[in-house]
Image 1 (cartoon, rainbow, N blue to C red):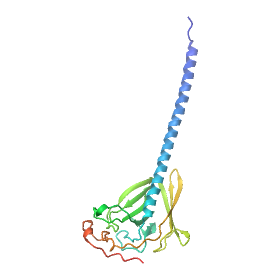
Image 2: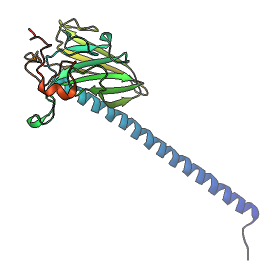
Image 3: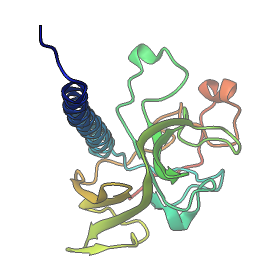
Image 4: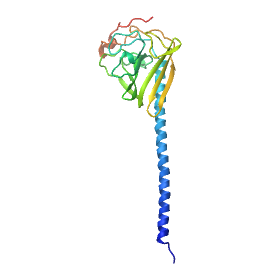
Length: 229
């Protein structure tokens, strides 16, 4: 009987090892590619979801001034970074309508103060239960996109894009530009509805004046806001 020589066995083992290593390398590459694709897809989903949320808010933007950090109501309807807000240096805030409150079950109006900001490289949406939040009231925070390094906002006013919104101006559109790690710059332009009828705190008695306590807001009729032109 003849058998395999030691050299033949070693050669076969070496060939098998090379094939196994190559197969493992291919499999590892496929897994890494799959993970990378899924990660990018998840990031793109985050971005798309953020755009949809911003669009939903801007479609229901209200012509209603609000208090910023407990200060007196401003004549602006959109507030940007230069107006100061919290400890974030990049943000945009405004009031939107259409916040569901069936049969006024909750002690609040259907108006909602919302803000978008970058905090520790996270793009966040904030909202308060009351339009004119008292000083120190903590907002509800929702993380939208991770790894955001910068946010730039431009406003289309007087047939041109401007980085600063003129006092009391109502833009026809807003351009959001985000710089995201691993993606680069992404931007989206949102059309703003025509200037709606003004909303005052008299017309919406559940919108607090910023000095009331939350539990007393429902019973009080605030008169801090004046009717807008």
